[in-house]
Image 1 (spheres, rainbow, N blue to C red):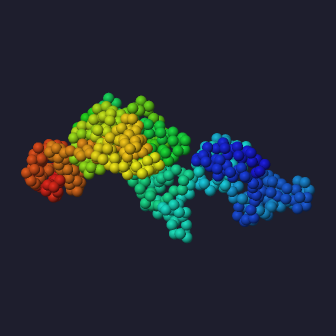
Image 2: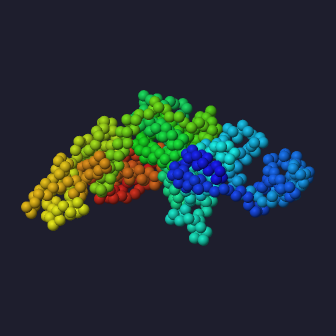
Image 3: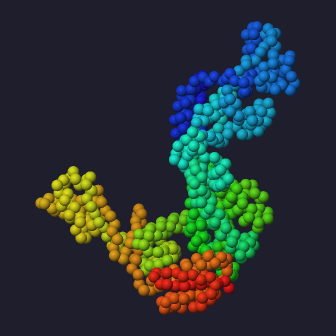
Length: 631
């Protein structure tokens, strides 16, 4: 092998190694320091060394085929078994002296068999020449990192000698599977995970999904049944629940997508967003898979499924509730069916069994001419006409603002069911439609975009000792006292924002503070709470008026009634009667908002008469007894 070292190095560099550090690192270093390969072993089992030697004249002959062996041997059986001990009984007539040649008794290194696999599997060059040439070199191979000096090398070595090229174009190098603590699995340590136990408990799709998305393929993975379950829940569970939601309501309405169309003129704001996001996902996953970026593709899928379930479906849920098949309801059904169908197609390589189950029940059940299996479908191509990059960018900003708003509510211990008067957002202004979504999602009456939210935020500052100590030393006490004065934090922060510095005099010396000299903390103003991430700041007005408190009480009542529907075992389409008993305040709220409560809970009647399933509640300090009864 040392004679072809330069070729080995060149062919190694021609391969797309993932990660690319393997090329110049572990694999590159190995071929740079290659030594000759002793291809024989003194073993019993193995591929016999095809070399016959004449004991009389020393002639050495390498046998090239079974036909050649039979032609040169006077005692080779027609059905010769080409393994020991049978092959050792076959002699060959020496072409030089006529003596009887005997086979060298050694066998080939088993890695020679592995390295010969690309052509040996086709019995090339004796047959299947076209099949072999169409498949060689391989587009892609994958094995664990220890194979850099095993299979990867022997493939490369034999291909270099026989075909003068690299035997594969791309190679994904896998890390080793460790236990949940990152330790190598060992029977001695008792930390070996039986894969069949996990396959039985969580399923093959879940195991596959864990390895695709848990970490980059080349990194060691911390494997356990609990880890598999967690990844299964986040993606597979969410996707299945979204699919189940569609099936549930489609069955109730006997909705057949083949009898309807995706009419773009009827699509809502959210419909257009999720369809655009779906097409962008198709492009992204296709590009990632083409570049063998399996983990990136899987994580994009997971991110989309989370947005589909927890953003699109959750926000559009009430569109499926009406009894009439309106244009808006048709658009909601067709949008969700279209997205789920494409999602099934692009997830099939990752979770083949679950994708097949969804495809058979959702697609094949209505599309009679659809391919028999999801795995016989073409991978989808993105419909560029549905992609709206600005819409996706703005919705991403909306999601970011909503996330900050939820965090602000949590910090203020303010439930999402309690309406608030106003929210102020410092960031790129969005159109009114996006503001409406933010307001509905965070349960606020108004959302305003402002250029500067500093007026809503108060600041506390402390000295950065690392920078101020060397500059002012014994003045640090005075500086700390200055920063602790009422209003000093706002004054210092605003001055640094405006001029880049804040100056004051103490002990007869001028002190100059810059951004690096102060530690800034946002302080909650009375009745206001804020959250900041990057360039976006949100401020919630948490002051509650009697009207807002009343509306929060209505939301709590609705939530409790929905819980009771589930506890009573009602179906989602069941209509109910609501009964209530409580204080004058409770009665007044029900009388004022009965219509709203009924609309949100599928109630045909709301009265002060209790019947059916009853339960006592404490809602914001008010004792309430509620009842629900199926109509």
